[in-house]
Length: 310
Image: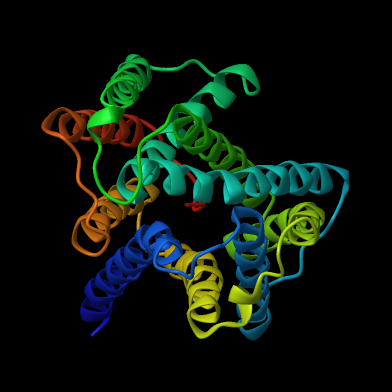
């Protein structure tokens, strides 16, 4: 009986992580399918606020231990909140200007690269040869994507600004992934650690959202049916439920296994962009995207990231 339970639990954990990765991978497509006239500031702010609320509700429902806030915890949460705040508008701007497939792949690929850089500069850790190889491979792929940007067809055109936004999203992700790791080492659950950081990010982004709303036409799309569905999907599912599933899966799976499974995320994003949005790349652009994914794989299997994802 116990043996069956031991086999079933990892299987359920694997399914949970796969479900989380698929939800993560729908983020860009959900935003692209939303109503016209959306703002990256409004979408990013509401998404992270709904994600924080979902995580807090889950933490309360499961009666997780309350966080003890001391000076170190406060500084980590503040830093991670800044990273999460950078990620939100940067990611949506990146996929808006580069396309869902390319923007997601660049953001995901650059995350582990920046995380390794933070390890080297802040934590004074030595980086292995594979990190340099993975980083070089990814950067070559990004350079090829920019060089072939004129060959991109579909609803969006790849731009240097879009690539920079996607890279900024990768940096933001690396920051809050690193701080999540540090908070977990202080005996906080991944759900509480992320809820705290997402709450700070929502506070940081709110003034920018208000400025954007006041300086433009009234964002009536928020109250439309498609706008509400988009925001609920992005906030509750991709920034709330997905992180709960991923964190639950990590209770039974090694981090390296969970991270390998979440490579489904860029495949989901690329598949959805191709099938649903009709995004197309030239042969050279397709090869460049594959090169970025290869760099991501090398970087991911080299490191042991935390439970934070996109």
